[in-house]
Length: 149
Image 1 (cartoon, rainbow, N blue to C red):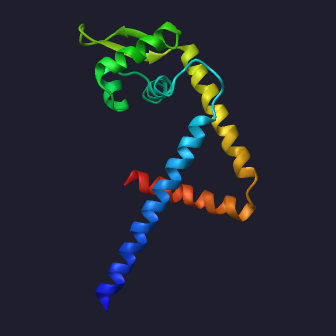
Image 2: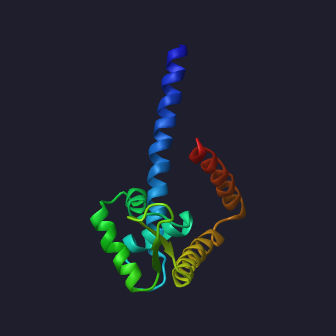
Image 3: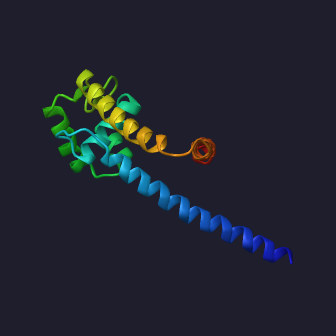
């Protein structure tokens, strides 16, 4: 009898995991699409976001964070540099390396993208009933806890 309860609990957790993962993926995809019209590709925006959040990274560190090969990141960073969104500075302790960081313009572009995404999501949430927004607020807290684990 005890084993049946554990199996049911596991199946429920497994089902919830699949449903939640699917919902997060779909929402993330939709939020990513809510962006101002611009010249940045998703890869470029992702790299700029990583630099914005980290402050500064070596090209290798950025490639690792973005989970791409260094030659791919070199192309992405080159495009961001051409647009004045990223700057290279000498590494403070290793003369063979450089540090990448967003420029003031890069931070402004990042802020525009974040604002567009937040505005889209706020419009969607405004259409929900107050009880649904409260449930999502609680779910967001729980998801933050899960993400820390």
